[in-house]
Amino acid sequence: MKPKHQRLLLAVIAVAALVGAGLIAASALREEASYFYTPTTLASANVEPGKAIRLGGMVQKGSIVRGGDGVSITFTVQDQERSQKVAYRGITPDLFVEGSGVVADGRLRPDRVFVADSLLAKHDENYVPRELADIDMSAAAHTKDTLVP
Amino acid sequence: MHRFANPARFLRIARPLTPALFWLGLILTLAACIWGLFFTPTERLMGDTVKIIFVHVPAAWLGMGGWTGIAIASIVQLVWRHPLAGVSARAIAVPGATFAAICLITGSIWGRPTWGTWWVWDGRLTSMLVLFFLYLGYIALSNASSNKGDTSRVAAVFGIIGAINIPIINRSVIWWESQHQKASITLGGSSIDSAYLAPLFVAVAGFSLLFGALVLMRMRAALAEMRIEARMRRMAEG
Image (cartoon, rainbow over all chains, first blue to last red; front, side, top):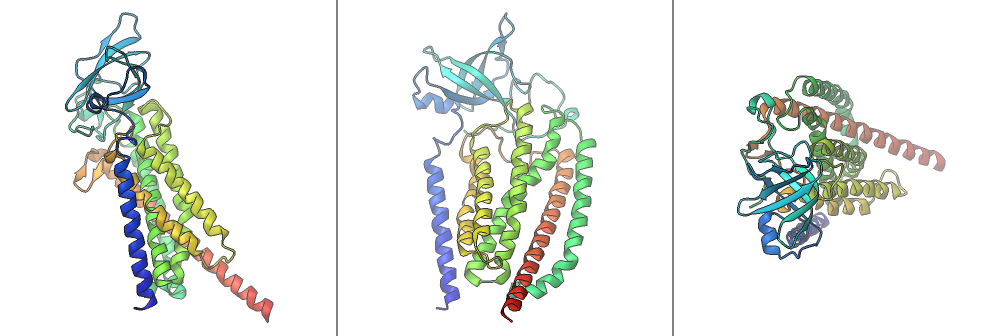
């Protein structure tokens, strides 16, 4: 075997080992590296009330109820299987509309309602000009679901 | 491959290629930026902030493509010992780091109005920041070798190991729930409306050509420096 071929073999083995290690590490991190719980993963995760967590999902159509004081709202976050009730006091981001994605920082109340301290809007992978979208700014029409089932 | 590994032959090709790539890249980039900024419609939800895409996406592509290039060049350097491989890997590092930084900065500016935050520690953003730090490490490591011309083998090994981050960046939005949305452009198609997609492709092409021109310039400068050093050494000896 020529030295060149030896080095090539060594490089191939090294790269294969690296890719393998990376994939194993990434799949082991599957739960830990997720930025938020979806309603489905939250339901199975057995998170105790009061623990600071993040919840992400789609804002269910027709679920936003604004309180009389003008700053408190409740809405439902859903994924493909489950839904979770959320209460929030504060100013909502511009992209926070029904049918759009949202990521909420907060905690579960003992009655299983999620109380959010802050809301971040989550944009999906679709980019559509306004004149084509049949503008209804209160609701985002989604052709694809952005959440992992 | 061996044909291009000869520095003299490389220089013969690179000399006319550099200005060609540079000017074509500059024209395409400017055209794409003007097209994207003034002649694309506002987006359904994001409004005008969507136009950051014409810098953000090419920068992300080149930041990741740059490291892929470093990894390939490093393998070629270690296995075949081509004299140009190490030079090219080193030439890619600084432009690659710059584009990774541009991607992070434009992404942050885009995140504020769209998501409501400058930064979150989700999988995509964090792995992209790691890429930027890997570039800094690579630059420091390759500059640490005392001999300017001969790129150190340690840097090449680092370049190959660091490549593991590239598929992680790519898959981060699929493996893990993240603040960042999933890929809009995949092998299966695109979920970006053609009004944005066309100038985006021009921007990617333009920035890529500019990147190529930068790398060629840096390679030529490195080769010239090596020749100067070799001549000085000969003069000192003789």
